[in-house]
Image 1 (tube, one colour):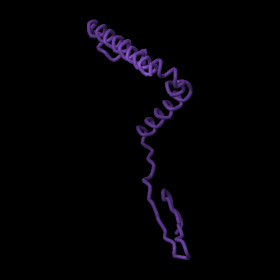
Image 2 (tube, rainbow, N blue to C red):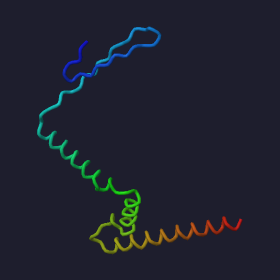
Image 3 (tube, rainbow, N blue to C red):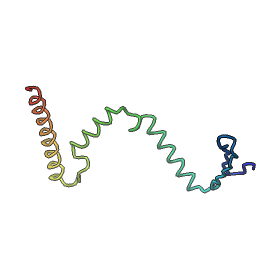
Image 4 (cartoon, rainbow, N blue to C red):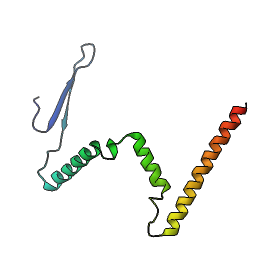
Length: 113
């Protein structure tokens, strides 16, 4: 069997002299649809942007700091509602202070023996 256009072909031989078997996988032909090509180019451009200094190109620590800053600044809250934004900020800062206080208490408690 010779592989044809848009066909993947492989031959695998079984162990101990057993007869091999052939497997053919037919792949859908590529289209010349401009919408598909536009989408492919958009995806490739985004990957290139992300890998050359976008969010994926930044260091792990920089991403963690940026994510934490956005979280504490209530970046996900409705920016049109000032009360919701400030309430979210205050609640998140108090929560962070509470967790830090619990961590300090746990360290002091465990260090006493």
